[in-house]
Figure 1 (cartoon, one colour):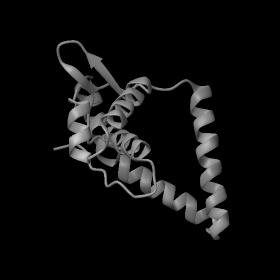
Figure 2 (cartoon, rainbow, N blue to C red):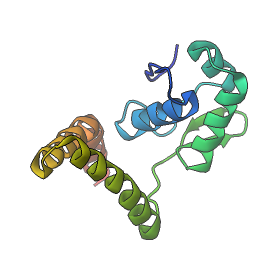
Figure 3 (spheres, helix red, strand yellow):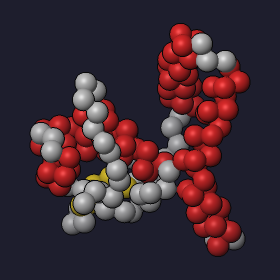
Length: 140
């Protein structure tokens, strides 16, 4: 059984869907630093995807710093890393532009988009933010 959920949608790249689901699990705190990540074989079998696709997913997550390989242990969730400012700006610029264009295309008002972003941020960061704050207090 996978430690995160993903429902593959026909017509969308399974690779991208799994990378997104795994990344979401990490940023939301479902998977914490040091947690074991499923093997390529486990991913492939659980999601009924090609082993090459599962391998590509794991390699991208390692390349992005979401996962790390620990000799003798396996693949685990990496300790959080903060991307350089230029990388964060580029990512935000591209992703935000796509969101704004799509919202404008379907007639969603700016305030609705901002409210939706705030809501999703709170939902994803809620538990993770609480756990991080508790850990920081414990280390003081």
